Picture 1 (cartoon, one colour):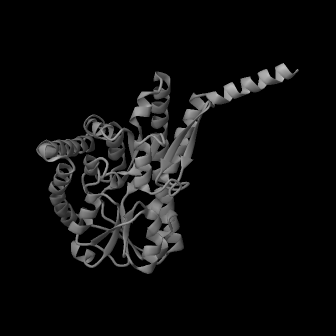
Picture 2 (cartoon, helix red, strand yellow; picture 1 turned 90 degrees about the vertical axis):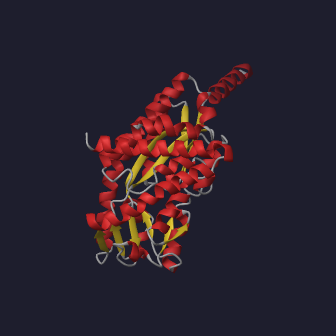
Picture 3 (cartoon, helix red, strand yellow; picture 1 turned 135 degrees about the horizontal axis):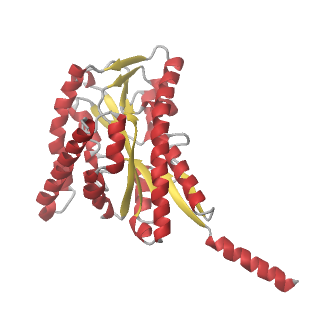
Length: 346
């Protein structure tokens, strides 16, 4: 009997040893778009592995800031990470092409096609992630970026003396400087208190996130500038991924495809629903949709940011690589712009 018990326990340990846990860290919280993405990813991995692989999801702040979780994925402490392109500039300078205003536009169908199947992104930009031991798996839109403020902003002059919370990469910071504001980079957990205390005057994010973070409680105006979507990236540790079996790699790709679709449908729905909730809770909220003429001034200012992007990329590399890095950045941005035009006119 004793021998039988020992055998059963040994067998149980052996079976238990087969189970794996993959860690997926997001910059967002429960019920945000990146959470829906991670949940669907985990669901598919569990199903495809017959329950042998579990995906543990970590939310904002559990493992540190946005930059912290990127570092954890790059060094292999966690396997997967999702963060916005606006937080990746210090790791992959070229990804800031996605953060340039009025490049992707705000047509959700066009954006989705570009972010999931762009040759520029997955053949030209993705190798830049590999250099940081990150494998880019996908990108997704979380909806149009909306300006929040306590006054109407229709022109660059309206941005004067306005401290606007931005993301931590150079291009988002330079964008609002160019638009006439005073950019203030903050991690999102600091934003509500800063808006409430008026140490910052405004912010920029998709509607669904503004509502979930309760920022609509401390802003009086919401502006739709038609500027760009909030774009999130999903990456894995490159060395770890290459060490997976062919079957597990295929499993990851299948889960990514399913998560892409789930997050896309969710963000379309939740942005509309949360806008309705904002107006119900704040019937005095002023909503401003910039006219094409008003947008044209911001579009014109945005062109100068292309050179800023080239400079940022060039300076991120050693002096002997600066010229080639600048040319590479130019190729990536111009190729991306052409792809967007082609898809939009198809």
